[in-house]
Amino acid sequence: MGQWDPPFNCNAGIYQYCCGTCGYRFCCQFKPGRLDQSGCSNYDTPNWVNTGQPPARVDETPEDPTRDKTNMIVYIICGVVAIMVLVGIFTKLGLEKAQGPQTEMTVSR
Image (cartoon, rainbow, N blue to C red; front, side, top):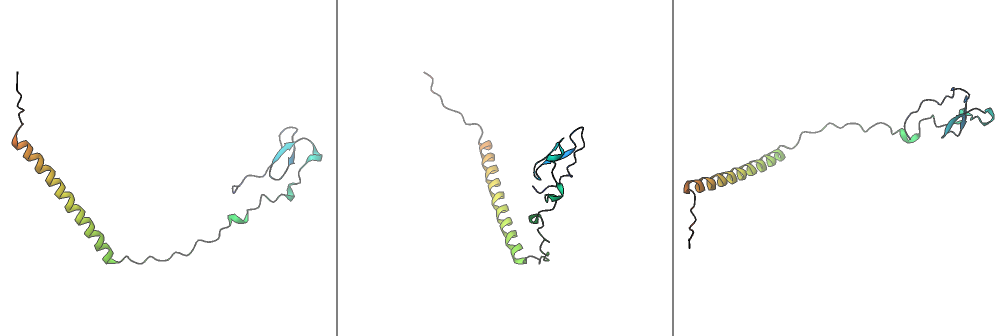
């Protein structure tokens, strides 16, 4: 699965032999069922892991100065619009406050 595992050693108690297959190993106590690990190739790095060298880095050229000016113009226009909206909101609030509270005319019966 692309990760390194340490070599499989069986040395616990009576289970001293490595049995099973190269992909699924377990410790057993019987020598006839022993796995010949010298024939296992899953210790070798698979070919798909060797991807090679990354491409050479190309020095980036400086950006076009006219493109920077275009972005600056967009920022200026958006800033002016935002300021105009804020001025409109505060003007409306100021006029409402200057007029004072509106009294409701109620007719009592």
